[in-house]
Length: 168
Image (cartoon, rainbow, N blue to C red):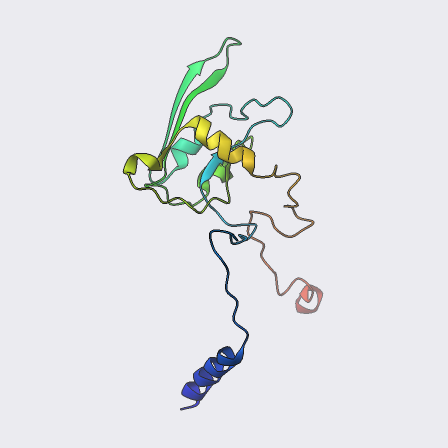
């Protein structure tokens, strides 16, 4: 009986609260800073070159194998990324590819409007992903970091941190 009264009180509070309507196509919803949208490729802001060193870690760690990479030897003797394909229809948007990248070349963008009429539209190439990555702010200028408490790593609160001397 008490649970039903609590639930009804929540309904009454919401009934008299002011309504907020967002005109969607004109006003887009602001996403949270840690939202994981479509994976995208970053490039160096000074030179415009891709940051990817073609190590292949992102393709290896992907649980659904939605990333395909073709690597060719470069003129300097290193590896160079020839082709990078993302099949977003298979992507879980888990962010493993962005976490494992040693040079932060791949990131999870804020893109959420991904609907298409054909399945071929769910396949993104290197140039398309670089275009999406160029629209997002550079991570070191976006205010994401430990000073703003918006890191990609989980932050754990230790309840015994302050009382540790008393416990031991």
